[in-house]
Length: 155
Length: 375
Image (cartoon, rainbow over all chains, first blue to last red; front, side, top):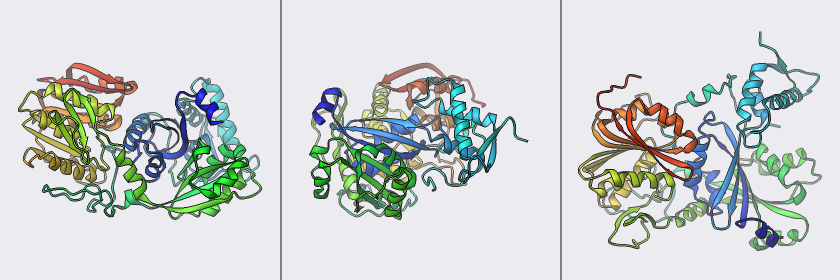
């Protein structure tokens, strides 16, 4: 199986690493340090690269990073913004969703919140080609599944 | 079920994108250290006398030497992705999967299980985390019937630090300009060799932004200039300027470890204290504001190789240190971020030129003479 992979890929992959790093806050300390250091990846290069690419996010937003480490100690990584549920909870100011979504509403969010979240999500590499409307619909769906209602405007 | 990594105690804030750039000013985002007085092994002492750095001496700096738990988990292949995500939600700091299983012979226990459809995950947890509970919660959340087998070891911080050191090889920046690690002898003794031990500071010469700045410096320094390195990291640019013939260099950084590393490197290159001054710039936490003991309009060349946000925030500040007609270089920015930086700096700079390596750019220009920045 490894041979088949090597034929398909330009470079042989040593490992895939997933971690959560605050935006603009990558440091060569744990967890970044040991996780990348084990595969002999250049910590400083990753920190600088990651911090530069996450400048547009609010500092300390937890970003999900997936790093592909190649056998020659080079690496690539993709950065995903936090999950929609994280944004929704943060916007609503709650820690958890409702225990009985559909029946019990914890709090409400306005349409404007949804729009703002959608705009941030659209910068994600996976969502870039989705129309804003579908992103908004998916956010509303997530919010509803957490027991957070979306209303036209607050107050 | 708390997604502990994500949600702490956030106040309810408006998520407008315009706020994302402006919030929480942190001038130079390198790294922070909570114990500035402590020493760490790689740069052994602050003294400018002979430096003895052995990478195996003791670590006392907590934020970098924090122990961690290294856990190997055998997980069924078909649930690898959801299980990894679940682990991250329930408290793991990182999850790594070795792709090439056949060569992973270190752990005897995993040998037999690899024949079946299991894969080995290496996960790192913070020291105080309840590993067993986290794994069982993660397994439950994705519907696994039984908790996967796992093995916990205390992670040795020496491992990854020394491995990181090994990676630093002599780098040739340009013809007859080399950056050489402290523990190697220069491959070309006649060239301009900058000896470095970066420690935990940024600047080994390998990164495109460092290269861009070094090349810029090489073209600018003719002899006798006063140079300011804003965001000095390991001090590489400040030292390089002196080697090219500048009269004096000043390095500023918000990270005390960077200042230590830079002074250590100055000693390695036999640079006397009068020629290279280092200042610790106050970060946002200190109440004294921005009071570095530097005069305005004192420098002929100013280079700031940091990140987009600090470069934008500190534009006025950085420019104020340059004499009129001085050259200012800004790097650490990606080419997609360049338009913003250009717009921010063009009221003050003329003859702006851009150098690019890969995704990274370095923008340089000369400070306009009579224009007084009043923003």
